[in-house]
Image (spheres, rainbow, N blue to C red):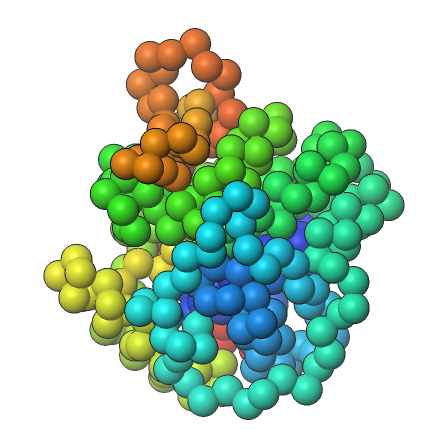
Length: 313
C-alpha cells in the first residue's frame, strides 16, 4: 500500500464542501491531518459545526476540526445563505454534532503542523475563502516552502464570476487573502468555475447517490437537491455545478483534469472587478506562471469516482 497523501482541508461548508469532505473521508489514499473552518458560505459558528456534522455522518468523529477566521482580512464578510440555506447545509436533517471542536485556533494549527511535520509532506486543500491560509502565511512566512502544494477551488476567467460579473465567491469574499496566496510562490493548482461548471449534478447522478441506500448516500442526495435548485434557476441547467469536490478528485485522479500553467493575479483595488482572477491564459504578460489552472474535466469519470468513494462510507 503506497503511503497516503497527508492533507489539511480548509473549508466553509456548504453542501459542495460537504461532498468534498466525504470524498476525502472515503478515500484511503488521503490522510486528513485536520479540517480548518473559515467564515464564507455561512458565518464561522455554522461552518465549524457543519464540518463536524459531516465527519459524524461519515462515522469519523476522530477527525480534528479547528475554527479559524471569523471574517476576511480587510473587508466585511459576505455570505451565501441564498444558495446554501440558513444553516449552510440545508437539505438533510443532520443531528447536532457530539464531537468536540478543538481548542486550538485553526491558523495556529496550520502553522504548527507545517513547521513540525517533514517539509513537503502536507498539501493544503482550500475549499472556501483563503483567509486562514493567508493568515498562516503572514504569521509564519517560513511555512511557504514547506507546503507540498495548495489545491484550491476559486476564481474564474472564461466563465466570468458567479457573485459579480467578474468574481467567483471564494475569491470575492477575501480577495486580499487570495492575493497573498497567489503571490506566495507555493505550487498552486486552481479549480476555477471554468472547470467546475462542467461538473453538473444531473437528476440521474443525484438519484445514483440516493440508490446507495446508505445514510451518506441519502444525505448527499438531499444536499444536492437543495443546493442545485439555485444554480438550475440561474443557469437553466439540469443540476448545478459541484465545485469543491474537484479539489479532492484532483488529488485522487489528476488525469481527470486538463489545464495549463498561467499567471493568476487577483484584483483588490477596483470595486467594479473586486476579486477577479486575471488569468494570463495566452501568456501575453511577462508575469511568472504561479498556478496550474484547470479548464477541462472528464465529468462522467468524476461522478463515478464520487459514487464509488461515497459508497464506501
